[in-house]
Length: 505
Image (tube, rainbow, N blue to C red; front, side, top):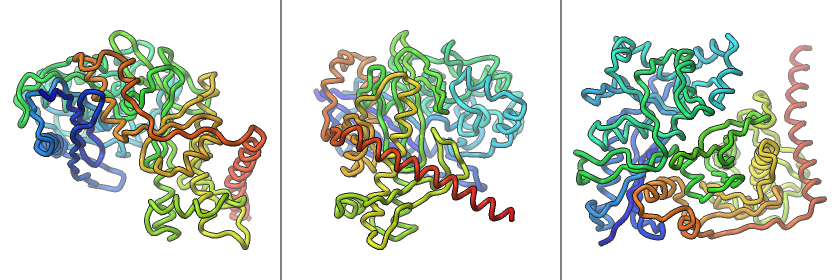
């Protein structure tokens, strides 16, 4: 009997299903894409039914191509795009509107009004987040205010709100449960980190009726069992929920305080597990729930920097230095160093910990001997420098060094980047053998809930490291590199100030 777990990784552009066997082996994988809808500039929507169908099709393909039997599935874990907001009718399950995706900016005026009224500090203290349309609360209010009769129906208890995890559990269980976990609840702007519950005060501030909110369970328990799901038998335990970044942190085996992971995707997404304490950042980082196991809640510091893959695409599409994003490592590797060239990837301003939205990208140190290979190498180093800035901020907030950093994401294919990252951080960089960290995190959490895995010790033994990078340089050279980077950072700012002064003359 090939017993296994089913992990659903529901993302922004597609849904991936893994079938996971003993020792964490991926037995099958299937991905189904679905469309995004852009009715106006800054508006991004999903059809809930298209999300659901993509999940069903991915499940069907995974089983068909693997030859495994759905009847042998011991549990289902869900990980998801987090802040995307849905509201549906409790009786029929029909959404009242398309989902508002985490990228959607239509509620920016409401956020600005709340900030102008002085609510930012209160919200940050309670939630660990900033007031921004990225999160769910103002999306909920927008839907209730712009769908006819929705507010009255919500007050009567006829409507249900959920992030994508909640919607999927509802559908998988035949509408039996309306539930989320703290890793998703803590991304709504409605969750009080210290109380570990949705807050009436926050709900009132954002004009969200409390009746619409789901219950909050742990990240690893049996919430319900499948009922009426095409392609699956009734009775399979639905046993894990975790937001995508937190699930990746768990899938990377960052089970202890101070363990961190960085996803080098379009941007760089960095999380450090802070144990059972909420760490308040002095550098503009966000505090959030990592996961809840039993009665124990674990927290994390998190930040995203808009570099990494976006920069390599810029070298390809904008500057034409490479034909394919995969070429950057070989091009950068054709020279031994950047020969003093520094590339500051402030393509949309400088985020944490510098917080200068008006700064712009800079290539500094070009000479007559500079080639496109030096610029490619400087670009990879610029990604590493940007991540090092974030790690230093996290270390300052945590009060302890980050000695190991687990990595994943498309740009982590660059060995030059990872080796340089180890040098800058004076830390060991570890890349796991499996690149499916996000979905595996959901499988691991579900496996714990149903007894498929015995505990964290077994999971630690399952996660194997494919590549490990140790620091190669000393403190003096590391400091020299940091000073060169900080000089370039200052130049991105001073050049802007010079331009502003010239414009005023």
